[in-house]
Image (cartoon, rainbow, N blue to C red; front, side):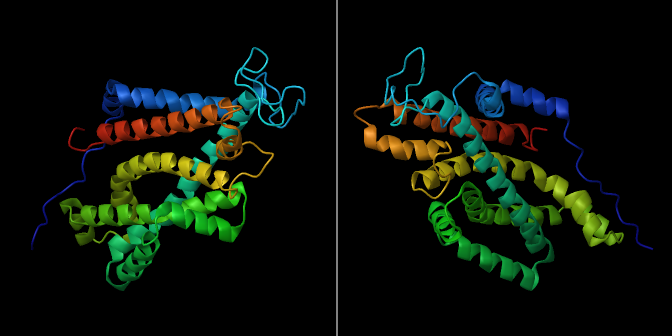
Length: 289
């Protein structure tokens, strides 16, 4: 009788070591602070002592920043600070929900493709390549235009456009895990397909999926701002950083602050997610854990 060698899965990552490495990265800490700040502002919007985001003051049209309006006012006298705060909800919600859609749809397809191979892999791979043939933003614009202008449709369009990234990543990671000795041993002793995927494949592909999701949130926020700028995202009078930039482009000389603050906010939140994603990638590197 042939005795199979006992081969176990890699030891689980130590949470304390992960947090220690993450805290040791100054860029990751900065990114985390920026992300936490914008999330806190978005969640606390109803509690902050600012005017309503759609309240108008016809006596304060395009007023420069002052004590009454720290970020100035827009073309119809609305407080820019208030619209910035409430606009953070739309931008962050679009980023997170879009990526959730991409992960929920893309990861299972990628795992099936890498696990089953054969004709299943061929069909899913051709479908993925067809989506990747169009640039991400162009595809998102086309889908948003087809679905109709609204924030929810913009999130669906961005999520579907980002889905191929997660299909390819999950497929590649699954194929890599399938070559490991502990997976071969588990299959040899008769472990079922679903148990094998749940116990060995998903836990081992989760770290790169998490890193990619964090980085993709930044891309999704830019995409949402672009769609809102084109009138395909959040619809007026509801605030959105992209729609605020769309209006501000007409008043760059008379009221430059209308474009300054949304632009700075988009830059900082995207920078935060990118720095945090890079820090997570380093902290989750299996070669160092």
